[in-house]
Length: 171
Image (tube, rainbow, N blue to C red):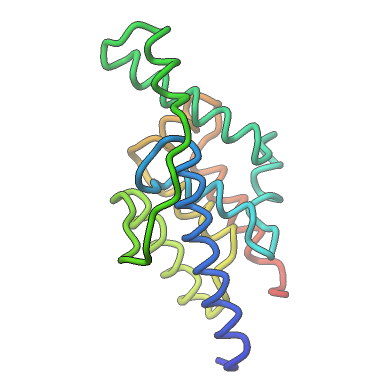
């Protein structure tokens, strides 16, 4: 791989992970999960995550609101009163982490990132937002899988749309 392309990809990965962490903390979560990685994918320079998600009527803001709603629904399913669940799911933002230690994320974020990276490597393409979308669409359990079900979006249809997007020539 061309050293300049490799540097751009490393920068994009760093930005993706840093953005996912910032999004998680802005939503009151200490560590990013797959849903935060999906939101961060909207900001990747290739724009493919946005194009795929818009096919399903979701932009970044609508997806973020749906994630908050899903968190509340999960709390209600666990036995909390809806008003308490709404409060807890719309938690205040946490302060940015101090220092520069090891990057920490939830198992779902790790799984999504590893899947997306494997897809990009096997296609010999830089990591794109659509890789993140395809990766989370392939996850059978967790917040994103439940969220997609609540929104009436079939994971297989989302994965197919991401694959179609990835067929476009790389920029």
